[in-house]
Image: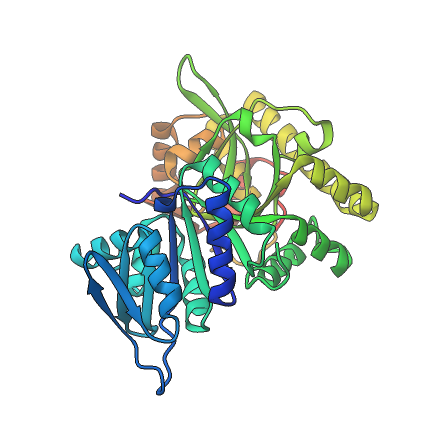
Length: 171
Length: 242
């Protein structure tokens, strides 16, 4: 069960998101409390896919190194095609929330599968719509899960960085 | 909040609609928003007294109530019901002290939040805000005085009528009006706003319903005969600002 408190940061590109993950890990945040969501960047000259080597899932595409690295680091890896959003790549515990939402048919009215996963971790509808728009626009979401003090500490770290937006969601 | 945030302009629009911030220069409002962080809280979140005075909050959407309770008998009295554009806790902002109050969200809410000392710095940088703050504080004091006098001087029927009238435009030529902020509250929540209990409020609303004064059912309240409700209130109460 993913905790229902989170700090969500929106980044313009994967390099900024990667740097933010590095900063959080340096500050002592546990890797299993971090999730990243982005759109699998899709152009005709960049076929994308994913595959297994041993126990690790790997990403094949324009940002293979980015997603491959995160999938090795964070808890959970997923690649989905979501109607309305296109290809969505996720790393971290949000994957289990999304799978639970799909398996339990707990898709909330008017929300995509990704929206339902975000809703299940305590993010309200109006914020979800903004986050889905951000993902459609090739931005990246970094989500820190935890108790209130952990997400507030995460906000302190992330608000000082390159994030376009950082919001705390408390249950 | 980063001005590049998708929520930045939305927050500014909300504050511009607020009676407390409406007359301020856009730069002063933008300065406030840029100092804040955005938070969302789920419905039924409760904040104990120790937490309500550490940070200054401005509601962007949803409602919160500030209450006091008696742990001996479990009874509650709602002191303030706040809506979008309203701040809390304004008294702690002014005197830097905790106040005996419990906060609970009635909806999923979004809000701006900043440390009290940062809010005071903003106040120092924008003294023109006092022109809005003082009338707002006056409204709050009148509201508390109204609650105290209602509790001491009026029966439940009058108190309930006056509560509803505080949340409608009683000058409206329409007889059918929907109260703002309180129209979907439970009877228990309404009771906590007038120092009564659920069964008494429920009985009174059913009585008025039979008389055609209100239409009340679970989670929904409409006034059907405004002038009759005004008559039941004996005098017009002080208004909750729109």
